[in-house]
Length: 220
Ligand SMILES: [Zn+2]
Image 1 (cartoon, rainbow, N blue to C red):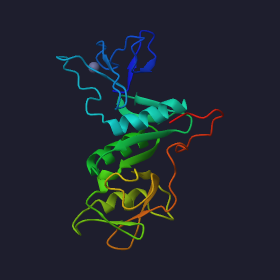
Image 2 (cartoon, rainbow, N blue to C red):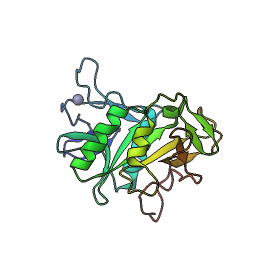
Image 3 (cartoon, rainbow, N blue to C red):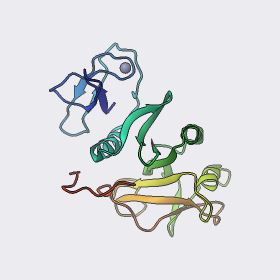
Image 4 (cartoon, rainbow, N blue to C red):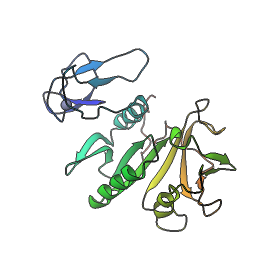
C-alpha cells in the first residue's frame, strides 16, 4: 500500500521517521524505500492481511501524484467499499485499472453511483495491448469482444457520460501506439464495431485531472 496510518490516525507515505500501521488490520508495516521504485508500505512476512496487496508501481505513481495534490483522499474507503481515490469536494471516485475487466469496472461504477460519486478510470496502456490503433481509434482485437458495451454505456459522445475514462500513455514504453506521454480521454465510437475513440490532446500528469493549479507546483 502507498499510505499507512500513523499513531494519530493520519495517512502517511512510506518513511523511516514514523511508524506506519495497516488501515485494515492495524499491524505495524515495513516502509519500502528503494532507490528505483515508488516508496510504499508492506506487511511483514507472515502477516495474512491482503489489504492493497496487489497494488503496482504504476498505481503507486498515480497515488503519490494525487496524494501530493492535497485534494484527493487516496487508498480510502466510503461506506465499506475501497477506492483508489476520492475527491470529496468534486464527488469523484478513481480507479487505476490494469485491465479491461468488465466485472471489476461495473462493480466500481455501481459502488460510485450508490455513493453519489462520479467515476474516473485511468487505464494502464497495457489494458489495450491487444487492440489495433488506427487514426486515434482503438479497435477491439476480436469482433466477439464485448468490451465496447462498457464504453457504449458510459462514454457515448453526445449523451450524458456516466464515467470519465482515460488511457495513460508513457512514450517509449510498450504499448504507446506512437503517442506522446500523457493521459488521453476515451469515448465510444460507433465505427469499426464499437471501436474506442482516443482524444487527440493529452493531459499531462503534471496538470492532473480535475485539479486546480497550485502556486509553487507539486514536483513530479
Ligand atoms: Zn493489513
